Image 1 (cartoon, rainbow, N blue to C red):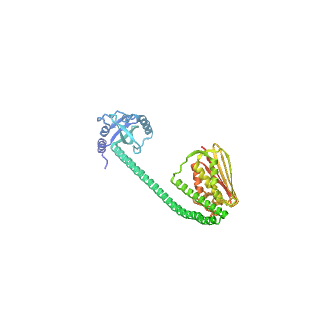
Image 2 (image 1 turned 45 degrees about the vertical axis):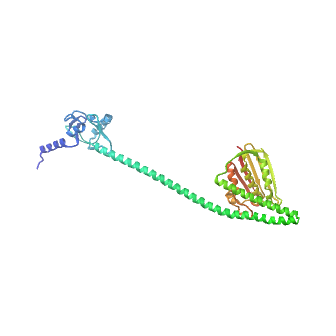
Image 3 (image 1 turned 180 degrees about the horizontal axis):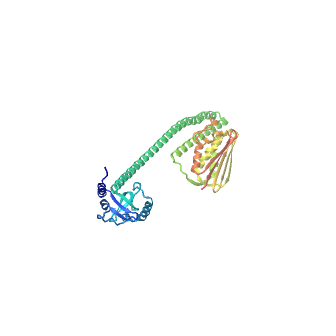
Amino acid sequence: MEPDNNLLKDSLTELFECTTEGILISDSEGCIIHANPSAHRLFGYENNSLPGKIIEDLIPERYVDKHKQQRQTYNEVPHPRPMGKMMNLSAKKKNGTAFPVEISLSHYIKDSRLYIISFIRDITERKEHEESIKRLNQELEKKVNERTNVLQKYLIELEESKKQLTEALEKEKELNSLKSRFITMASHEFRTPLSTILSSMTLIERYYELKDHEKHQKHVNRVKSSIAHLTLILGDFLSTEKLNEGFVKLERTKFSLKKIVSEVIVDLQNLKRKGQEINFVYEGNEIVFLDRQMIQSTLVNLVSNAIKFSGENKKIGVNVSASDEETCIQVSDEGLGIPEKEHEYIFQRFFRASNASNVQGTGIGLSIVAKYLELMNGKIEFKSELQKGTTFSIWVPNN
């Protein structure tokens, strides 16, 4: 059965006239030859008014030059081509309003002339729907980010709380350990001088009745030494408590450093062992501008340690030099010395060197000295050799 050409022609005409897509047929120069009713409605033109116009009349002004170039390129190699799937295309209505479109191109040749068929679809509703989805996604992403930020903030706060709790627990453990060590140490350190005082007072009374002045004075000196030792211990305890609570503040005043050092040496005479000698040398400015209490406490700790850790008939050196800029104090002894492997721990609270177990002490004096030097922006160093002695050196700025 042969096809009915008239019927096919009629069917194509109906398709052209009735399809919902706009169809434009133009020549190679862009002149519109035919336009279906949907194209007229799409672009806002009266029926049969589009033929004779050029394609660029239906394109926003800013895209006209580019479209002419693209049309020329298409004319050189015409082929079926969908447009708008991966790009944003715009068309222009008669009233100048731009709207988004998708375009498919095809072509045919008649009488050696090229004709282009453009199928045009208005995608305004789809674009609005896409924009709506995009806005919703952006709002959702924004909310997710906000919730994520809040969650991260909570997690950070939780981690910080965990860290603080861990630190608090560690401090509590350390405090309990310090309390235990303090009780053990204090009971031992107080028992020895108190026992000495008690026994010496009994002997003092007896030797007084016997008029044995030499032995009487010997035990009087033992009582004085024990009281001086107790005074040092109590002073260290009070200083440690104040430092821990943050009650110690730097208070600089002008005073005679030479006088303070001399008084400290005199006050510590009762701690000296038989034959021990303290050599004091002072150079430079007598008046300094420092924290008097911190300097005095530092001197007491360093000199008393030199006495305690030195044997009989040993020399202790106290050398002080003060300039306008800096004060330097050196305290040296000929005592036990500090084991080299323990040097790094010497300024830790309650630390006592392994070779000092038979020497009375609390192990907190040097930690107090180090803290005072920190508050005064000073520094402390030491050199030590076993069985030969130790030298502590401190430097404190005077301004």
